[in-house]
Image (cartoon, rainbow, N blue to C red):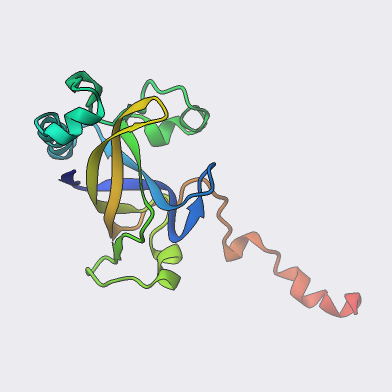
Length: 186
């Protein structure tokens, strides 16, 4: 396994408060990580980790010594055809993205590097916030699929961002005159 420490990334599809089952029923903590294509340091960290895996005899054995099967696990937000990318082009434009998961709860820290308890995570670390992630890249060969997987080892929230994928409601969206009309209902 090769370790990668990102710079500032944006999180999407965050499932960190509690593990959720995948299609096979296995429970995972997970998030999608959006990496700015101009973040040369993070991109290079992934490239270096992949090169390290290509030199690892155990990793190579999993892909029948085919080093070409060991590639950076990025998807391109400018060209990917997934529905969620097409429905949010402004979120994915100029970004690489990947999915990271772990069956064990990753270390999750707040802005000041304080450990967040599970009940704090949902409000603090959400789809749209910015974070730094510690990831573990590993080679897999499962059910005929070969490639590089991404383990989610740690997340530190760095700053807030606009929430993704949800509807926001503010106090101004509600009618003040309903409070005064309340007596007529009773």
